Amino acid sequence: MSKLPNKTDVILIGAGVMSATLGALLKELAPEWEIKVFEKLTSAGEESSNEWNNAGTGHSALCELNYTTEKSDGSIDISKAVKINEQFQLSRQFWSYLVKSNLIRNPEDFIMPIPHMSLVQGEKDVTFLKKRLEALSKSPLFQGMEYSENPEKLKEWMPLIMEERTSTEPMAATKIDSGTDVNFGALTRMLFDYLKTKNVEMNYNHGVKDIKRTSNGLWEVKVHDMNSGKIENHTAKFVFIGAGGASLPLLQKTGIPESKQIGGFPVSGLFMVCNNPEVIERHHAKVYGKAKVGAPPMSVPHLDTRFIDNKKSLLFGPFAGFSPKFLKTGSNLDLIGSVKPNNLFTMLAAGMKEMSLTKYLIQQVLLSNEKRLEELREFIPTAKLEDWDVVIAGQRVQVIKDTEAGGKGTLQFGTEVVTASDGTIAALLGASPGASTAVHVMLEVLEKCFPKNMKNWQGKVKEMIPSYGLSLSDQPELFRELHQSTAETLGLVKKKETSDHSNKVGTEVYS
Ligand SMILES: Cc1cc2nc3c(=O)[nH]c(=O)nc-3n(C[C@H](O)[C@H](O)[C@H](O)COP(=O)(O)OP(=O)(O)OC[C@H]3O[C@@H](n4cnc5c(N)ncnc54)[C@H](O)[C@@H]3O)c2cc1C
Image (tube, rainbow, N blue to C red; front, side, top):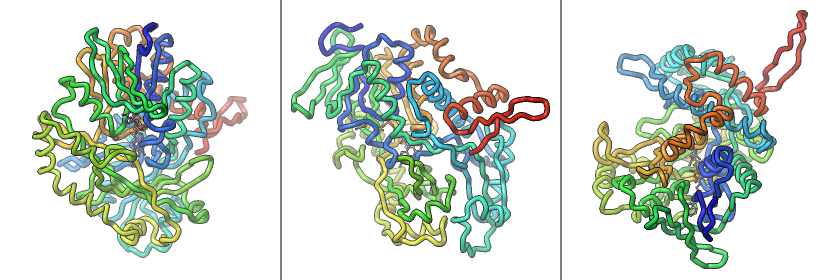
């Protein structure tokens, strides 16, 4: 479509899972559009999307207790859980479409079935878990969830966690077999490999330095080619800032009114990774606990079986911490550099409000390995320090903005799509629920930035993502049908032809 040198239709900044997802959606919806990707690192999926930088949970609210809150009348609010589950279904459907169409292959390299469990201790939390199960059971999205307080059953579900447990406090857990572990790094690389075959221009070692609007309404992106040391200027009709934690400073450079009065609060993280194959073999689940009082939601402790490079591994964490960097590969000046006259008061207000959070994060950074082991032993009483290494996880930059409910400088824990009023530029800020909901978030970008095209694209969007625009919780039949078909395509269940006396063909599920 575009003819001028260095002029293109779409520029994607950053080669993480978000840009990869947007690129893949656009290539199906508008195959003739030219797309260029600029990534400052040497390959795709190296920051938060990398498999060792996040927990790889296919977030669908099957085990994360912070998505269901207890209301003042004692009832459980499941609306957030339903929303996140529905968003994950969109990702499953799009990934299945890509696999079915042979655009990506070998889904087992990026998604694996793994039971999701929630584990609590103490009478109050046991009551909460039971009520949570009752509330979730009313929705078709959470069918198949089991509950138990029976120590023998819990031993069967999580032998490593129950071994040599001496506490007499009541314990309870829920288990659902339809959970997933997602290798978002592998998925990101697969998506960019596919995009390369569709002539998407991948520019690694290219850091974006500035973004300015030109007099003819295009966006000019100034890029540092780190191979040649040269500065290049590229123009595009549409720019997506998918730079992860570094999206905020790039958004600020655009000068659009929507970029003002927004700040970022970086939260670092680390995981403990088991190096003992015998220990790894004795756990097969993602087990989520409850966050400690005062801890931010992203530091809910969990013990996760992971599948990375066809190998099973075991992660515990994350331990949140404070670092002024916006990316793992960022600079110590990132936070201070993001303070501008237009967000100064928002940032100061957040600083005052979030003193206790900052204190908590600094305390977490200062934890010794022995202290971390104490926290791990709440999950695995028999854990030994020599069986565990520490890996630094990705950075999450939480959005700070002024809101009606929270007032000036309110810390947000979700993701925010910020777009210019004319839809020519969009940025993704925030990090939660994250990569699992990439398809939902990128559809939001398309709706906001290409409202007219989206009308024409409806048919194709529905072909790729059949539940787009529908509420699956209101359509149990459709949910069951799509959940089963995506599970089969993604290899999460095994299709087994069984014939009964009436010669009907059935499907047996394993996970
Ligand atoms: C500790 C932790 C645990 C998590 N656990 C989960 C989980 O269990 N499940 C889940 O769904 N999500 C999880 N997430 C969130 C998930 O990892 C992120 O939401 C997701 O990876 C973000 O993808 P992205 O493409 O926006 O950013 P990234 O993957 O960070 O990609 C951004 C890219 O932009 C590049 N870039 C930055 N600046 C520039 C520039 N100026 N020029 C060019 N390129 C640039 C970076 O190098 C990077 O490659 C977790 C995150 C963390 C940190």
